[in-house]
Length: 223
Ligand code: DC
Image (cartoon, rainbow, N blue to C red):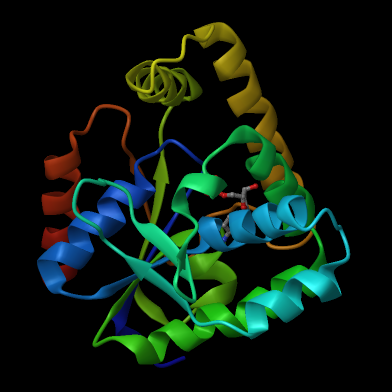
C-alpha cells in the first residue's frame, strides 16, 4: 500500500491526550483535525434530542448538513459544528457518551460514519485524525500512526482534574474502575476494536508533558 504522508492518525483510549496532541499538531502543521469521537457523540446527542434510537431518522438529519470542526477562541477543545449549530457543549456529558458507545457498536453506524470521515482527506492539505480505529480501519494508508497509552491511574487523575475545573467533585477510585471497564469493552469488541495498527508507534504518555509529546511526534515525523 502506498503510504500517504499527509495523514497522521492518533488512536488510543480516552484520557491519554489524543485531542490535545491532535490540536497541537494541527496548529504546528496547519492541517485539519478529525475528532472522530465527537461524531459518535453527535449521534448520541441527536438520539437524545429527538427522543429516538432509530438510526435512519438520525442519519437523515446529519445528511442534510455539513459537518465541520473549528478551534474557537476561549475554548481549548475542538468544536463540532453540524451546519451552523455548534454542538460542542451538548456532546460532552456522560449521558451522551453512554449513548455514543451504544451506537458505536452498530455496523450501520460505523459504515455511515466511514464515508463522512474519509471525506475529510479532501478538506485540507493534511489531516490529523484522532479516535480508536483511525490507523487500523479509517486511514490504513496513513504514513504516520501513533497509538497513545497511559496508566488507568494517570487517566483517572487527569479526568478528576478536568471535573474539578468544572466545579464537580468525584471519587477517583470509581473513575479508575469505570476507565478500566470501558478499556476492556473497547478492546474486546468485534468491530473496530481498540488495538494499535501493526505499523503504529506506541507511546506511553503517562509521564510526558503536552509540549514534550508534540515535539516527540514532530521529531519522529520529520526524521
Ligand atoms: O473519544 P470519545 O470519548 O469522544 O468517544 C466517544 C465514543 O465513541 C466512545 O464510546 C468510543 C467511540 N468511538 C469509536 O468507537 N470509534 C472512534 N473512532 C471514536 C470513538
